[in-house]
Image (tube, rainbow, N blue to C red; front, side, top):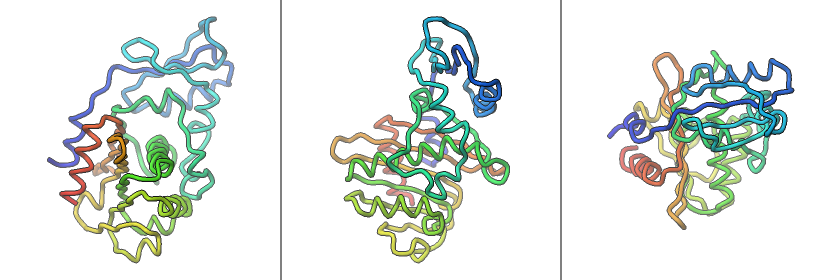
Length: 250
């Protein structure tokens, strides 16, 4: 099995986001639409007096499965960019994602990376931080994270802070990428360095909770045009199989 075969293990229903009774300016609606412009998630708007103003619904096969406020989407993804995580402007325990977005698990996303875009990857970056937060707050288990370049753990202020915080817990942290042990400085993690495709062009964050067998994982692979194809999941079987693949193949 290869990393790209894990995409075959997940599937999602037909999904759409619907903004109900919007009173925020039209540009906010356009920001939400642009966030999902290249994704298999429709964005619509409607009026319905049974809902408060600026309600956002996540529909699966036409049925509402989650509800959030438009304000919460603005605060977490629409009006921010990925710098809040690389610079450490948002503390790990403050990382949240509205239900209508967090419940998009098993949804396949294709996003552009820097320099083409500083915002398209934000949703996947936020999911990565949520997984790291879950590991930190659990305080035990195993976390496996890839960075392409291991030096990012040392050089990105926000990332450095996160992994130092994880080092203060009993979480067994393993990091993967190109470089060597010195690239992570004195951060207490186990380093796995290599030059093959998974080390150079994969982005994964996999947390396994040893106490109850639960977990959460994000996997994204870089395409030749530098875009990223990814998904996240909490399905126990997929998380476990991905974890074991990393253990045995990297």
